[in-house]
Image (tube, rainbow, N blue to C red; front, side, top):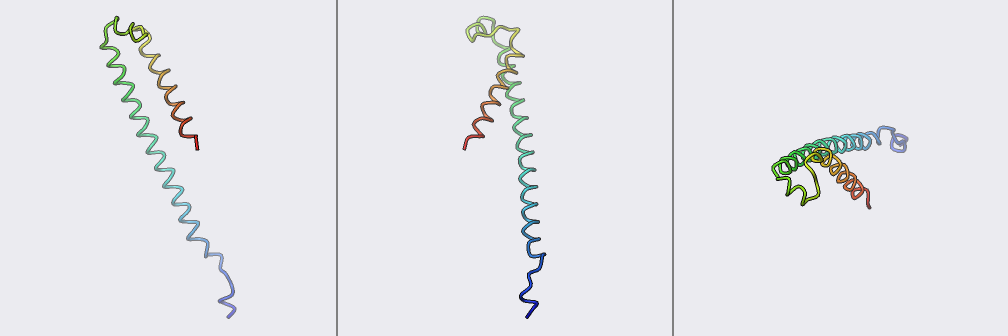
Length: 92
């Protein structure tokens, strides 16, 4: 009878292990997701740069960009886009 009344400390172990595995899997998924997102962003920047470099000076002027602003301009635009996306993800 006393055996049935006592609660062992091991009863919480399976729950704690499952919670740890779930947290590890979540972090691993986030790491993979961020790596894929970074790769996609890099490919987008490369594609944009190729398109902009193929444009004539007149077309670039119509867009409001000069040829010497292509590299740094894309970097700034990528930072702004990433900042906006982070702000959207933080919203409830």
